[in-house]
Image 1 (cartoon, rainbow, N blue to C red):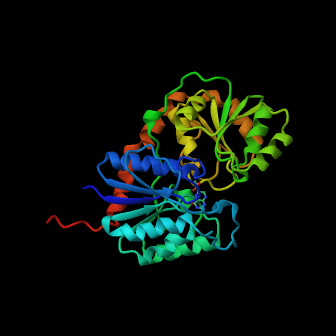
Image 2 (cartoon, protein in one colour):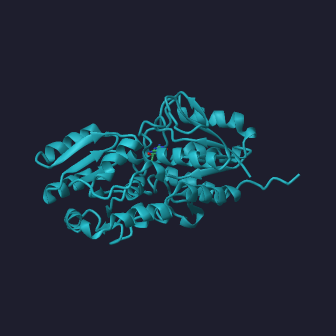
Image 3 (tube, rainbow, N blue to C red):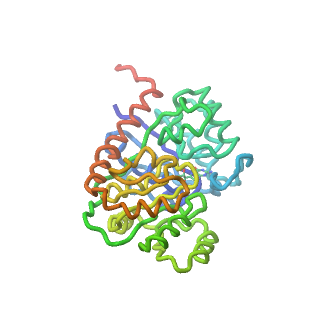
Length: 359
Ligand code: HBI
């Protein structure tokens, strides 16, 4: 039975800009698989958004939300006006009667506060771990008033909140047909992500310098000052920043690497880049922190390293040949395919959308 779904994207930037990080991939992939499975979708996103899926895309003007992960625990809720967040939710209120369900991907206060004022159910996909008291508070309120409507990537992410049992684990996925298995890589490592302090790129650069294995860096240069500081701190490190790539270009470079290095300083909710690497046959070396714990099979598809230990990263880099690259691709096919993701989300929606009478 096809649902009529209104999908509201993150308000931190246009879909396709990379500003929305992993959540952009989640929105695009989920739209793709739900469309393929016969649901009727409308995606609502900030202006200048692009979506490589043949569904209705409604783009709205307004200022972006500032990124929540740069805020502190006591940071008050902010909403610049004219706000793209309020524009997207005003639109949703006007059109809601044409849909069975709204699913949104904002890590912001407003959508949670608005929930009781809407006539149709709202599925809240929470894309990060706990970051601020105001966001935790409003999500806890919805967990109480609308149980079962909060979704996350992983158990680890849910456990950062006060009532983990209220969060449904949806995992993540990628379109495996876009990723080519690479059996024999070049002698280089990859680091992929928004270049911002919580991603701790400095540790990967230090490990590249100590192991003398070249490091290819890709991702949105979100914090140029931070990047400048790293270059000054490690002038001799064998690293190269290649830019922000679309999936096709990313997987070409990533697949040609001996390993992906993941150095999250914060609790990474999932780590989509980890499954992109596995899909190319690339082992993942990651700190044992957050989402990668539930992705990497230690000793089989990569190495989970003591958090913040550069020495641990270097040891793992020297042991990377113990990993069979075919096992990496196989795990991606088993756990992280789009059909598996579509199934998990449909099961979640069924708990919120009243079954229409057969009449
Ligand atoms: N910050 N305020 C805010 N809202 C979001 O939706 C948001 C964010 N920061 C990062 C982000 N979304 C995504 O890039 C991550 O969830 C992946």
